[in-house]
Length: 180
Length: 280
Image (cartoon, rainbow over all chains, first blue to last red; front, top):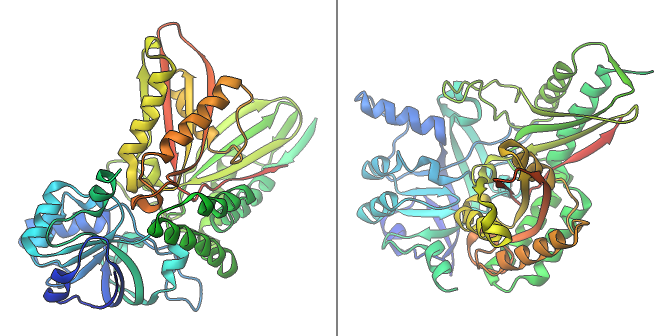
């Protein structure tokens, strides 16, 4: 089923999605990958606040290539989500609603998705040039020293993703492999 | 003796880093296009068409095919009758990588130390493999390697008694474990024989072979064909979302080995299998 939805995603929209839905997202999301997750986790350990408001937001696991002049961003496809699994349940429990990446997640992440009625989307891996066309603006908002791994606020329009794990715990990767 | 200034190597490496990250070789382009005919799943077809469109956008708009523009792997075949002048060849290659990644708007993905992990900010150092060959030329291959797929690669130290069936099981197990993480459709490079490090290098070199070109050893060619068929029957499909096109090609390289062993390395590459070769 194809849907067009606005970010930040409402609770109702998140719960209405089902694994296998093809969705075009428009609105704001934040990028964060390995190093930014490690820093956010350390900030929480030190009882410090996160550099972004995590409640209801969307994190895109992505580190872009540099933008050429006149463009908002360079190539901008998803990185492997599983490397963030160690940090993810904590962020979901703090209100993170959507994640965009590629690849498998652990059971701990799936359980946290169900517990918090969140959603895991995937974008097509290795299609960074194509996906960059759906990004309207990109601004570094935290951890600038991390280069490509800094946290960026993106504004996207009709960014194409597929629901892989929904709020009920259905997992498209598992369904696909079971059907064979 | 022929003299070659290493500045020429710097210039070539720089240009090749930029070229490899924006243009796939014609055989890779064809392989992605052709794979559409074999795909039955709707979502699989949709993803393959997006990959084709992605390649078009990359070359027309000069946006890297993938944001992971890789760690630069450089193969140098140096003729024993060429005299390299003008400085260190290793420095010359790294300078080329630095200039290519900086001036070409490529992502800097290299950290200075595996534990300390500070970004070197120019994508150096490269991983450089030197080989001495006959003649007076220098052949350079630049193969930027992304880590989504590199992370899913594996080495197995099999027992000789496990035989060719053991090899097949090892390759299929690596592909199953990789699943959606390695950005399928994948390209597989397999090395069999040698030592621990030799089989890994064979697997990496196997990724450079043109798609559709098989080994000249009869049983190895059969193995490549059988593995491709078995992999494409796993059902992983484009993006790992189900379908027939899980791999575009399997290339196997072999080397003599020890009486006690049978090392097998499986180097997985995504559909963005980048490599450019030039001879100076």
